[in-house]
Length: 301
Image 1 (cartoon, rainbow, N blue to C red):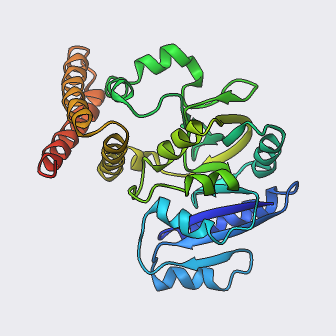
Image 2 (cartoon, rainbow, N blue to C red):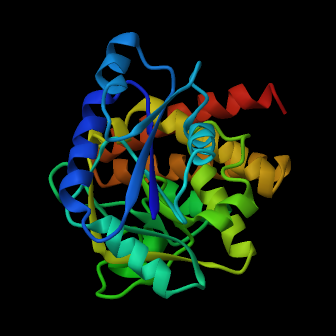
């Protein structure tokens, strides 16, 4: 059986659509649904309390993505956990496809499918590199290294076969329950972002692989505008700060801060030479956010 865990925070209407799709699509495996609510409003909770399709865990406060998943996992009965975002919609029986692959490949500890955006276009589903100095520099410069090295399979599996990756995004991550228990779930030091990379890294350290399955199709409705918003950037930076401090230390964080600021200055300069005002605005905003972030965290180091 698969225990599908969904963390909700003010997204009840989306969550109910997510559950509708699960009911419609999943036919090949037994499953249960557990919803962990991070202290949403009473108005939203009313929509969820009487729904018999899932077990509702009402948390007293917003404890973050990873910790809410940890709490819900304690209630799970399945041999596999599928961590699913509330703003996802199954486009096929992705749950059964992931389950069958895991069941047939005991060497695989974590897997996930291909994600599509609101326009049903391929979107980031995994990463081939762990967060690092190199990956940060590549991101700051437009992900040129990843595009050259991995071609079309840097964040989305365009091949016709499973590929091993560094990490699966937490939007649709399936993990064996026994491995989850060995790892004690997500590290509680993360609030949101970074915990999925950390979990996948620790899973690999146990000797298991992390795999992206192209046949499993899931729509991820997270808005493109949000992906470029300041709040999203700041949350990612907080997750990166926590991840780097855990795995590499404070000095590594400082060096990465300096590199990112320099790389973003270079990116702004290059796009100005090319007269690409849209890119100049994008990277200038990212540079401003990064400078503010780096200054803020210097006070706590």
